[in-house]
Length: 266
View 1 (cartoon, one colour):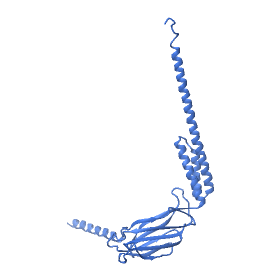
View 2 (tube, helix red, strand yellow):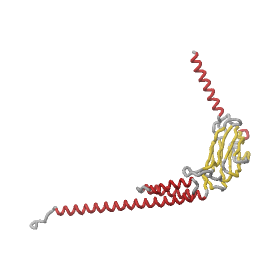
View 3 (cartoon, one colour):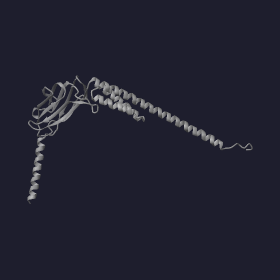
View 4 (tube, one colour):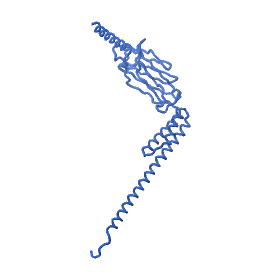
C-alpha cells in the first residue's frame, strides 16, 4: 500500500511540475501576417524592414504582454505602430538603439495588430562565408511577460556584402556552374575543381581579388574540359561510324567473293 501511495504522489508532483513549466513559458501564439524584409544589403547602405503581428491574444491568460526587438543594423530607428480591429492607428512609439524592450501590448487598449518598422545601416562583415553566405540579424522580435520568461516570435536574417566580395562571389558562382556543365558533359574537371576550392578559401579569407582570379581560371578550365570531352565523343562517334562502314563494305565484298562466276549458259 505504501508503494502505491508513493506512485500516486509521484504522478501528482510530476503533473504539478508540468503545469508550472507550461505557465512559466508563454506560448508563442502571435502570428506574423505580413513581412517586408530585404534578403540582402550592401555594407554601409541604408535599408528598412517591416513586420506585422496579428492574433495577439490567442492565449486568454495573455491579454497583456511585452514586445521586444533587436537588430544588428547600425544607426537604428524603430517605429512600433498599434492598430485596432478597424485598422485605425491607436498608438505609435519610437524606441531607440539596436534593441528595445518593455513595449506593452494590451487588449484593454483596443490593440488588435502591431506593425514593427526598423531602418538602419547595413553593418560591416565580421567574417566571410561562401556557403552558407555570411548574414546578419535584420530584426528579431520577442514576446514575454513582465518579470517572466520570453519566447522568440520570429527572426529574419539578411546577407551582407561589399562590392568586391559580391564580385568575387559571382565569379565563384559562375565557376561552379561551369564545373557542373563540364561534369554533365562527361568531363572530369579536376583542375577546375581544385582552383574552385582555392577560390572559396580565398573568399572566406577576405582575399577577393585572388578569389576572383582563381574562380575565372576554374571557369576557363571547366569550359576547356567540357569542349575536350565533346571533341573526344565526336571523334569516337566518327571512328565508330568508319568501323561500321568498313565492316559493311567488307561484308559485301566477302559475300560477292563467295558467289563465284556467273554461268553463261544460265
